[in-house]
Image (cartoon, rainbow, N blue to C red):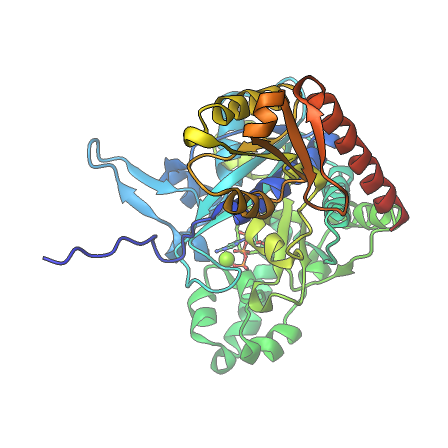
Length: 439
Ligand code: ATP
Ligand code: MG
């Protein structure tokens, strides 16, 4: 019987070493930046009660209606779901541990999210987000901070994204707008697509977020939520605009930006690109002041964002994450008589000695001619090869061979090897920094 080939699940991808290393560098860079703004990590479980998401995200949203991986625990009958986003779990954790009781919180999380969507470039069934959430800050200053932080992140990585912002006002204001919007749309039933007809009475605001070009005209003429906002909502938004302007962050107000999740109020924002087609939103967020209370906690203002790592990676030039700290310092090659009876133990000792000095070192393992080993050394990306043959072993020495620049190889006594290599690497690092400064 032929065995069926095992493959990863559709829309869920493996990241092989070269790619996974780019991811690690990207994640490390983002986290460093989040920490520099005072954000601290939380790690919530990947599986939560289905109830959490239906309550937090809303029954009539794309996610809850058709994208969740939900299942019944075979052992105790609990209804569970693989998290489709990180905000609900984060809010649940904050409530469960009364985290915002003493002081307002700046938090971040990262990890895999799961949505049953049609896989395409920039859209997967397992994808990864890094998100920031704040709890206990009511003013637009924190909304602005989240936008400044993300703006700086794009600068860190040389990305060119545009900021769109909007305000959804308070629930009462939305309710009045909603009634008028439904009346307006009811009068134009024939111009609505299937999705819009279905949403008309449950979630009409989402209709304005439609990606269907045929809906463009109806949406453009619809009553605008902004006209229904009271003075407090308007002031919050004006405050945000003033701060963005003062900080020199360009933005556009997009009145049609409503976001796909129910929990938002007041500020919403997206960072978008035109390079990823329909998957153009790299980062999205906003304020969700009602969520904590809705999930059973004390009323707590909150605001956050999530950025999609797949989309960010797709925008980065292939070598952009290759920071110098990703480079390997040395590849230790060894070749000697009698299956390396003398050279192999020496090579192991040398590799360990260099690691002790803090260097990143690969020791050649397995057999291989000297030529084959040098090929490996070259492919590893290491700056230097450290070579030990029988000649060197007899003299207690090694050869240092530069792999990335034109220079002669030199023989160095083993007790000098660490110092010599460290000195050479420092010089390279200094030159690299100087070069970067002039660019
Ligand atoms: P979209 O409109 O593209 O479906 P969304 O509004 O559903 O996005 P959010 O729930 O706000 O997205 O998630 C925040 C970010 O997470 C998105 O801007 C995007 O970068 C990323 N993201 C969301 N869904 C996916 C997915 N299926 N695959 C890859 N990245 C995703
Ligand atoms: Mg979506």
